[in-house]
Amino acid sequence: MPAKIISTANAEHYTWGDNCDGWYLVKTPELQIIEEGMPPGAAETPHHHVRARQFFYVLEGELTMEIEHHDFVVKAGEGIEIAPGQIHCAHNRGDKPLRIIVTSQPPSHGDRVDDRLKY
Image (tube, rainbow, N blue to C red):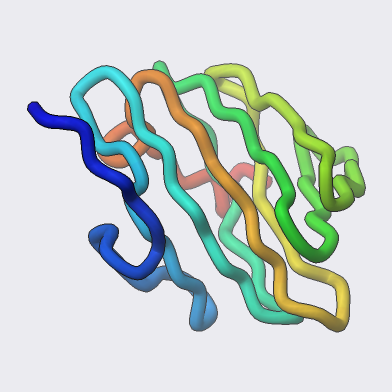
């Protein structure tokens, strides 16, 4: 596959959760890199991944990542790793939009287990 410059302007886009956006920057069977946008007050539901290891890196705003009932506040220029099996959920508890890069290896879509009832 030839090299190609990718951005949110030309990447495959999808929506999720509370008016959140996602753009596939890399989408292969081995690796997934997504830029996501979360408006203030948005959150995902508690879940875990069976195989995927994830790394969340904050570009703008402030991410509150809840991992196994503990809150971690991640600011712009910082990141946090989620191991397979760890129950987690991302929140934008700030008053500004949140932009993050989410790297998953292997890809997390199709590997997600909803933990709402356990949490």
